[in-house]
Length: 449
Image (cartoon, rainbow, N blue to C red; front, side, top):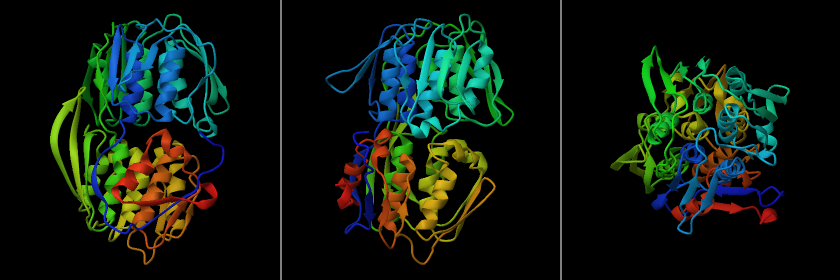
């Protein structure tokens, strides 16, 4: 962060509808994986469209510390000269993963099957997040982990000298855990198998194939069985990172809610395991059109045309949660401003995000006058409250909560304030300028300016 002083911001209804054409930053999930897989490949990979938010820059720094040559070219592309699988070395210093749970969990997989020693830490938010879900299964490959109580960072990893392949059934659907196990399996002899109870985002499988690994994915009950042949020779392969659908969610919902708005978002990733929010918004009556469909780097991409719409409440099945787990705070905003009740099911995973995102989303809506309850892992929102807005949202170092609250202010009856906007740049650098360019009214509070 550039400053230790919280940066309070306020948003309110804009004077005119939102309009314009934009691109959103590169997909964060793909950006993390591109740097890691390129760092394990032979040769130099050119990555264009990489998200240059703080989370991803932490991954770049970590791979550099482990021996990969990572640099930003003058044209904005990133060049990564990998070490080859098994070629990483112990870092000279602690690896600071900042606010990124994805980077920390995936890197656990990389470290677990390499004969090296490393220590990871992170900011106050990341140090509260549980890592046991990855370190317990990864220990089976021969790695040794030493962590704080509850498996929390700081975390010391002694990688396996001769890693064993893993065979593991995920107790709950998690793309991060799946990817960590596959990354460990790259430097293990034999076949690594991961069974997921429900399909989760498959960027790791797509990228492994892109770099030349042998990966099979077959249906298995309600989920999938992924098998990876260990110790392949990954070969450098250029990557174009599509726009992040999780980042696109914020201008999309803002345009749907601000009357008269019409915007276009170019080059958004449309991986079907990431587009649960788009499906849900369409079911709520959203006017969203996908044009110019194409493929980039093994991922489907398209342009989105979004027109302001009158939304209705919805019952979202729990099975859809893995395809939109990061989008529930902004979906909750849409539901609060929709007609009729909504029930968002199966949100237990939100309790272990950057904050307890379920409790934080509940607090964000309630402080701004919404009628909302939590029953178990379900959130029930009674849309169409008489008056919304006027509250101050405590962001708890959670970038998605901060952006969701600012979008709420754009369509609420009274302005909405967030206590701290600094953390937005971890995932969406330039968010404020992009939204203001569309016509949004977002202002820094005078005492923070």
